[in-house]
Structures are given as structure tokens and as C-alpha cells.
Length: 474
Image 1 (cartoon, one colour):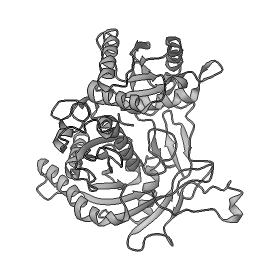
Image 2 (cartoon, helix red, strand yellow; image 1 turned 60 degrees about the horizontal axis):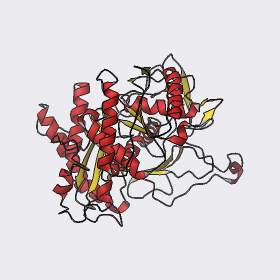
Image 3 (cartoon, one colour; image 1 turned 120 degrees about the vertical axis):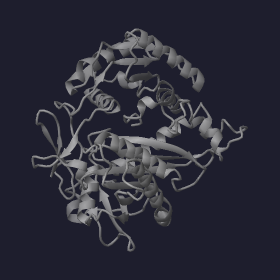
């Protein structure tokens, strides 16, 4: 059985690892402090009744330090009138940020909690674009209805703990890491030592959208031995191209960060690709793996390792869009409330005959509707045994920062998917056909400072350079 490690030698059972299930694969964090905590100036930008926000800020400030997060000052509140127009909203938020900065001794806030009147996808997308691409500040959006949820006269502790968790990892903190019952920690999530864990995905504009809008490709990768931080790279590419054309360049970015932190390049890459259909496995082998190796060789040459250096690559593709379902046997159905136990592993009988593959249900489903993820091993240069790659994959599912639950797909694949959604926020004007009369070449979208080129700093990634070293996108 695995455990989650917290400070002060507190250990909480990690429930649901490969055939072991005690209660559920979710955890409570009351009474626990985050492992590596950050400092935070409690700053809110709002368009909601001030008295509600003041009460919420007081409750947050009184409880957030219980998790180990340091408050640099009292909450400072600034009001920004919202607009559906991206440029207008950006101007108003910039003015509110200037007021906050001046009121804080000309120190820019590290993170903004932005209370919005209601849930609106256009407003949300515009706030994320402004915060990430213009201001260079991580943001957390909270609807006005959430901050008024109370229990015993105070803001719901579940809301406070969730926001505290987000504040910590968005500012580079670590909430938890995996640990065995043995004294030593699980490093590299149980993978081979000196491994960089990678996730990748591509998002397309979709039907009914701008037919010329580029596809958005992403890579996220670890750089620490605890596999708690996944930093990001992103590129635009030609519309509806399934392979990641700039994969080598993005892998190179992540390798350089790994080398900067660790003083050496990784010996292994454990790569999880999301959104790859069965008909595209050959494309992964012929197109993407050579790009990965080319990116590795380029960085290796810069590091003085020669022109042919390349770590050993193990690549899996992850799928959930399948029609395979598993059910408990009749004698277990009532006992388990019609649900399968988390940690369910199927690697015989219904798997693909031409590749080593397995189905893994790493998460719980109280309603019995859990859908297992399907993992297909495309290449295995690191020589993982089936048991080792299965257990490592299951371990990785418990390292997600957004919640104290096991993810239904492994963390790098999930994070890559989330980053694609974040890019869709930046690209929303293009997705909504606002540039129908423009020349609409790939270069046009890349240079457009309303979507991709907002930082205007000769950057390939669309976000501000201030965010390069944190998981702002979650």
C-alpha cells in the first residue's frame, strides 16, 4: 500500500493502488499542512458585493495559514467592471491591478483571486488570457455564489481547502508526494531513476469553428525527482494535423529545464500521449518518436554529450474513448454498491493482440460508472516489465495537484489535456470566427496579440515569461 507524505511525519493512506482498496481513492486534508508551501498576498479583483468579498477574504486569511501558506499582508480588494469585450476587460483589469500594486508598496501580487458575478465561459477565457498572457500573473476565478456558501457562519471549509490547494501549486508549492511504507520516498513516482515524465496532446478547432484556426499542441514534463511539477510548452500548428509537428522543439525546452535544475540530463523519458486513436499508432512510431529523438540529440549536443546522445524512451498512448466496460461479479455487486474497486487492472483477454496494453481504473466511482483508461505501450527502450510500468502508471495517477483524489487518467496526460483547454481560452476569438475576414495564415495567428502573441517578447509560448516555471495552467 502507498501513502501520501505530509510534513510533521503525518501519513495518510493512499487508497486504491493496484488491487488494494481500503475505503476510497480520495483523501481529506483537514489537519494536514502542504509539503512545500508558498507565500501569498491575499488579493482579490471583484465585481461583486464588497461585503461578501470582505467576509470571504477574512475567512480565507484566517484558515489558509493552517495549511502552511504564508500571508504576506492583509487582503487587498480592488474592483474591476467586467465586459464581454476582451480588450476592454483587459484594460479594466490592468487598472485594478495597478491600484493593488500601488497599495502594496509597488509590489505586484503573486496571484489574483478574481470573484466574478456568475459562470460565463467568455469572461473566464478573457480573464485567463489577460492574467497569463498580459499581466503574467496566475489567476483563480471564483463565482460569487461560491464565496457565499457558509457553514456555521463561516465560509465552507471545503471551499477554503480547495482554494488553498490551488494557490499553493499555482505558485510553485508542493502539496504532497508519493511514499511507500518503507522509510525512503518513491522517487520519480516509482519509475526508473533519473526519468523525465512527459505528457502531450493536440487540440483542434472542431466543427462549426474557424476552419483555418490552427491546432494547438502541448507538452508538459517533470523536472523534479518527486514528479510534483509539470512545466509546459505549447505551439500552434496547421489545422487538423494529428501529429505534433514541433514536438522535438518542445521536448528540447523541457530537457533544458531538467538540466538547469538537476545539473544533468535525464537517462530515461516516460512519455504519455493523449488523444491517439488506434489508426494513429503507426504515425507515433514514424513521425513523433523520431522528433522526440531529434529534440534530445539537439540538446545533448549543446550539453557536450555529442551528436547522438538520447535518453531511453518509453512511450504509451492513453485512451478513454473506447467502449469497453467492466462489471463486478454477481456475488460482489451488492457488496461493492455495483462499483469496481479502484486499482482495477486488466491486461489479458480483452487487450490488443499486436501491442502490450492494459486497462487501469485508478479512480473511484460511487455510482458504479467508472470508465477505465486504456494504456498501449508503443515503445519500451527502458525495458520496463509489465508489472513495473503498470504500477508506475498507477502511482502517477495519485500525484495530481488539483485534488486529493486519484485521477482517472495518469497525471501527465491529464495535465496536457488541461493545458489544451487553457490554450482554447487564449484562442477563443479565433475559435469564434472573429477573424473570418483576415488572411488567416498560420503566421497571422502566431503574430496576433489578441490571442497567441500577447506577450510580444519574441516568444514561442503564448504566456508571459513570468509563468514559465510554475503550473499556472491548472
